[in-house]
Amino acid sequence: MSDDREIDEIAMTWALQTQDPEFEAWDSFTDWLELDPRHGRAYDEICFSIDRAARLVGAAAPANDDVQESYSPPRRDTRRGVLAMVVAASIGVAVIGLTMWPMSQTDRVLYSFATKPGVVRTVNLPSGSVVQLAGGSTINLDRNDPRFARLDEGRALFSVEHDPDAPFIVEVGDDRLQDIGTVFEIGKTPLGLDLRVSEGAVVLNPAAEAVDVRKGQRLVKKRDTISVRRSLPNDGEWLSGQLTFRDTSLITVAARLSQASGLDFTVDPSARGQRVSGSVAIEPIALHPETLGLLLGVKATKTGGSWRLSLP
Image 1 (tube, rainbow, N blue to C red):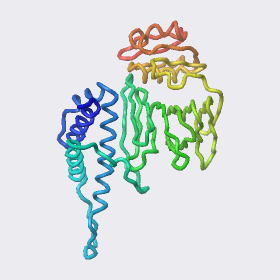
Image 2 (tube, one colour; image 1 turned 135 degrees about the horizontal axis):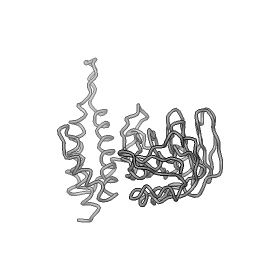
Image 3 (cartoon, rainbow, N blue to C red; image 1 turned 90 degrees about the horizontal axis):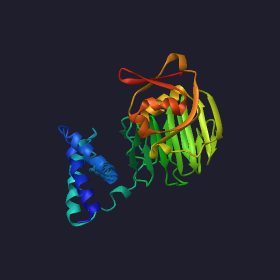
Image 4 (tube, rainbow, N blue to C red; image 1 turned 90 degrees about the vertical axis):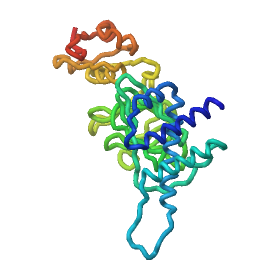
């Protein structure tokens, strides 16, 4: 049995078990996901396929003109039944076509992925696009529309399979971003959003401001103020364990360090207006936060369970 085939079969087993309301082995399931990026990819693709197939099976139920009330098959039973068919099919042949069945545009059916601070996760979408979540981030995806995402918290790097007939849409708060390119990074901030485009282009709010952000540009929105400027060539650098700041508020620095390292960084009230520049490696900072003083010109002091950043 090939390694990928074995992963698919184990993923099917986990998909079946996690549909049970009494399932409790979440720690073991999480450990399996973190062993290999392919595990999460296989599990996500199977769950997407099963959910899609279950809705189609429900929609195909025979009509009865003599009965006026509608009937909705139990969601859990339908999903488990379809999954059982997929598992049975996998014994002799590969599963074919579930992710390719056409879907009509219906109400959104959202499911979410979240990362703890200090943890990065890759989410592979059925459309072929890839989303990489930074630590402390939450994203919602749509089971009915694989070209939709909503970033609720944190930061994500999108590598999108471009389709001119079906643009990829990302919602961040009240803002809407439409992909007309391939690679872009979005961060949700307390006052708005931070968009950086590495390849292609993205449009902010096509039906309103319609601001084009091209390759090598960065858009920052704070409440109703929008600015576009040249971006540093460091988009997605947190994936390789690095953070670079250029004239960045210390409050933003503390938030980014908390997301990336898993430690809790706060800012002393006297330093909230301070802006800093510099580049830091995440792993050494997680081990020795006090070295931030040398790298960013601030003082890091242990206070209870957090590290407070202040003026030196």
